[in-house]
Image (tube, rainbow, N blue to C red; front, side, top):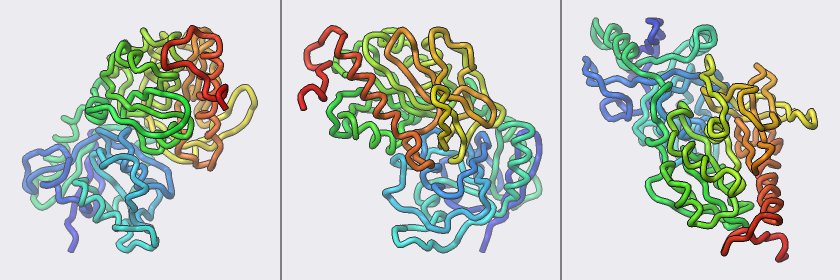
Length: 390
């Protein structure tokens, strides 16, 4: 027995479907009064991956957003606990064309519909996602609302909720996903403090290969970071508008030049702002696992995973070399500072769609720490090159 539903965009465009996942009264969607009890609201974005849907849904970078999958058949291999990128999904909802009702992988411990229900995430299936994608490509990511349509005024209620949804610009979403207390992962030889702006599990695994990583809340001060005597500082991925991550940007003012820094995704954006650059919101963002990026120095092409709606304006960051560019639209995908030990990329090297095209970036961070501490003044408990003791 299916429950008819609808997705309504802020511009009034309507997409019919059937409700899936958590009943909205128990979901994490934004509650609004209505015939069904509530509805889900958020900013609609589309993702082009054909596999990895669980990793996408559990990426904290999707806070505040409704994820529409362009690939029509989603859920065929179910879900597995080992594939989650965070403790639980924080997206506002999921939109698919055809939800698989049976899982086919021996690794699976649940089907996708049950997984969404268990974690309180509502969704809508049977949507013409090709039409939805074309609409978002033309008019941009925009707020939306979805829910059951049992009564005559349901569409009007959904339209009003979509119009009232603020979207992601100018909204502090990092505070909703950052860790409340520090924790440590990895056993690599370097010591790294990682700012959790919405960090993915796979990133901590990649860092843990080269370092013992202490993950700290986004509001951690520079003084607190330096008191931990790290060899390097990492800036993670995360959701929303980088200009709302002011605490991290302020901390970077006191960390740049003192300790090597590496940023990924939102980490690139906050680093770019700290260095004097400008950010802007993309029309519909980059969300997918097949985005070509060129490393400028070598001409080498990497197939990358990306998930961001904001970017740093090319040419706006003083004192950096722009190292990577997106071949789809020419946006800035990486830079390295000339005068301080800091670099960043906009894409996700830990996701490995290439499959290993971008793994070298973690080793580049280790190399940066090694070269910096060979010449920098030593601090007690930090700066000793692990390679020197081997």
